[in-house]
Image (cartoon, rainbow, N blue to C red; front, side, top):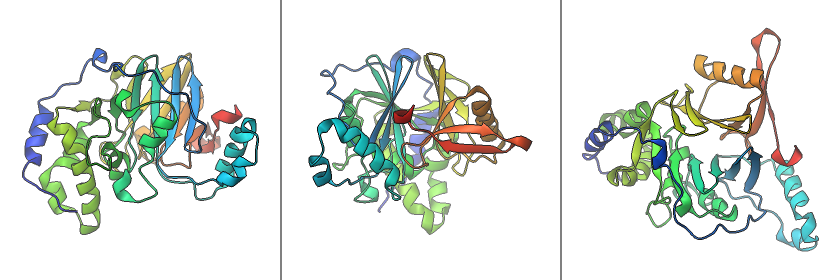
Length: 304
């Protein structure tokens, strides 16, 4: 992948001059009424108070259409749920759409179509959930690794979420967008840097990239938590509604103090955790064991 350098320093200067947008700036867009939710293997919906959470698989998942055709439509959801559990290859990255009323935001965008023929399914699965990419008013990034930002661009090399403001931590921006970090990166990592830069820069040029600060409530019911991990500048997003809490993580490492602290709190207060790197749909319950050890078990919205 060829990468034109020289304008990245200017991009950081642009970002440095930006300030966190007020909650009122993340708003519903004027679009046609949402389509009906289609039951597909790459989408799982969870109702949390007034908030709908959609897990969106970034990896194409194939189910035998001939088998479905032999079943009554009323049995499709059960067959699809069984297929989820039985497929050992259902891995990869999961993004999460959050909808409350007419407002839709996205947490992460997946790897995108440029990283493999089987990938880049977030936008399609979003449509299958009855949501147009044009309805997304904000994309919150847990980190800026290629796994989470590649899907910001479509196959036509245009912004996939053209009405969305993009949010990431300042540390992540500096790490991934600074010229010298790309130049000094090992050859094996240059592809990841190039993917991040080419995916994010169109948003930067449009004035769509904004920094987030941990401890800040971005919109009502959505706040930012620090989650140190293998990727610099990783953060998590805590969703609150109806007395329930959901922590969406990215590249957090449980051995890091702040991530362990957040997971311990999730265990004690029975928060649901959504891990975008866990097998789809990534929902988990965390338990605190004797001696302070943490265990994580898959949780399915369809089974609760």
